[in-house]
Length: 275
Image (cartoon, rainbow, N blue to C red; front, side, top):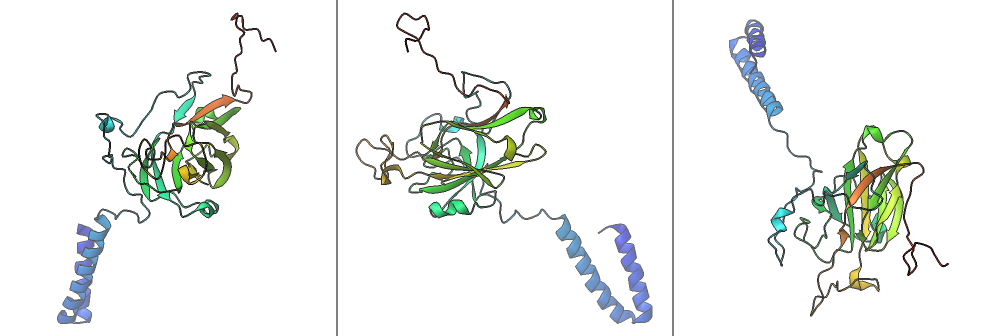
């Protein structure tokens, strides 16, 4: 107990002894002393974790393991994801996000608060051990993260958010605003998020079926491109790969920038088109 507080309580005891009598003063003083000690102890204690904190990420052992499972770490694929049309100002959003399953398609209308219930490694499939989830049979799900924008990206620049692949449908929210919908589990897509981000603080990204992203992956419950993925494992078929399974990244581009590059050449290799 701090010395000044103890001295103050002693003065209180002396005053009580004069006005209330020694016995009553002792009873009052000990009650106050115990209460004060407990209050100070509680204030110095380590605060309890938030009831809304996400369950921490943990690497899980998959059914089919490899020597490289433990080497993935929590910052996967740090390399620049697009060798062509490389822009130097870029930032990877790969790493630890949060995740929770959803009940159905209607949940896209009510994005949950961040953080979500459980940490997840992005990119990964939620069915995999490295995701930290390793669950099967989930069709609708939420992913979320927060990010900041470098100060040098301000002024006359566009901020592009890129997803290399999300299986199968993705609805993207930035700071609570539903920004885009994309269908196709094998295709990259890019969003201009300049008007929706905060340059002076953290931004929320959520993805879901619909950082938030709402994801819907029916696999073979519907007729979609699925390869050998199935929810009914047998023979040569294998477990689905649901969620954000490829790199997520930000880049800064000028107001007038190249979005794609198509090259044509004829059989002579002179680059001239016959069309």
